[in-house]
Amino acid sequence: MARRILEVVAGLGHRVNEKLQRMGFAARFFVMLLVYSGQSFRRLHLTIREVYFSGVLSLLIILVSGLFVGLVLGLQGYETLQRYGSSEALGILVALSLTRELGPVVAGLLFASRAGSSITAEIGLMKATEQLKAMDMMAVNPIARVVAPRFWGGVISMPLLAAMFSAMGIFGGYLIGVVFIGVDEGAFWSQMQASVDFRNDVWNGVIKSFVFGVAVSLIAVFEGYDSVPTAEGVSRAITRTVVNSALAILALDFVLTSFMFRGL
Amino acid sequence: MNRKLLDLWVGVFVVIGIAALLFLALKVGNLSASNFLETYPLTAKFDNIGGLKVRGPVKSAGVVVGRVSDVRFDPQTYEAVVTFNIDARYKFPKDTFASILTAGLLGEQYIGLDAGGDEKMLKSGDVIAKTQSAVVLEKLISQFLFSKASEGPEKK
Image (cartoon, rainbow over all chains, first blue to last red; front, side, top):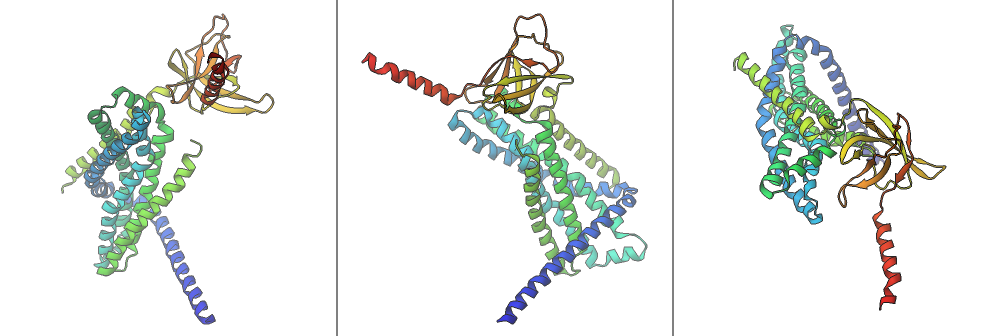
């Protein structure tokens, strides 16, 4: 019995050790990434290409989901607000929930599953087909050539995508509230402007989405770079990217919210 | 895909992103309206500020002329000390009357300034002497009920 307990505890310790080692490796990888970023910025078109692949190609899903999230918010918000006779506050509800929380978080989740997974798949396959090793043999640093551009492409795209998501969502709320239901247009915008503060709400949302961009991109490139170079290993790495990114976004969102919006 | 077309797409993407940010800042947020360039602080003491919050508006004749910057409690006099910044373009007489009002029945609370007739103007850091507290709905209702109850039996 005592031996069983000892085994269980040892197994737990082993797992914790493994996770810690992986985190340490991830941290060192991040530092290397930052160090070699300068090198990769000298060939800027590499990063621009990645902005295209992770940013421009995510446009459609971000804009469409932003619109639908806004439509649903408008519909449900109106349903509740009109019971208290304050349907003009619909603008505040839609704008605040989008700029503070939903914009960065949902855009981050979509970005992780749309762009993060493909980054992991690409780097993982490069590793599986030994392209990274080949680069190393040709004295091309794979971190500077492959990893850093993908990371920065994601970091640049994410805040822009989140801003578009919020803007599109507010347009969706406007569409439902003002155009279809008939909330007064002037009250909708003026109440929104009166209670949405640029620095407190909009800018904090931008900071959030930037942090999420760093987290998602780092997880994506790291999981790809660290994947087991087999078909199964790559598929697992992609799964881990999506799961870990989603968890990281939600956990970071809670931490950031509790710092940013305390006492508001 | 050739590089020029790619650059173009990324350029369009960045422009849309910045346009979305500008939309959020100017149309949704209050970047254009509420940030006064130069302000001067004034202070007023109230018995009860109700639901007044920091960054709440200060209005005169319905126009926003400033924002609340600080709300404190004075332990000596048991009053609320409210500091607010007024746009430097606007000057108010010494005997200006400050009251806490509510926008709509359940809306946000704001400070209303009613200008007096004094020749001297309020300077930076001055204290407004004449104030009126927030109307607390519960007190109003209970007063109404008590007065109704006291006059009720005599009529019957």
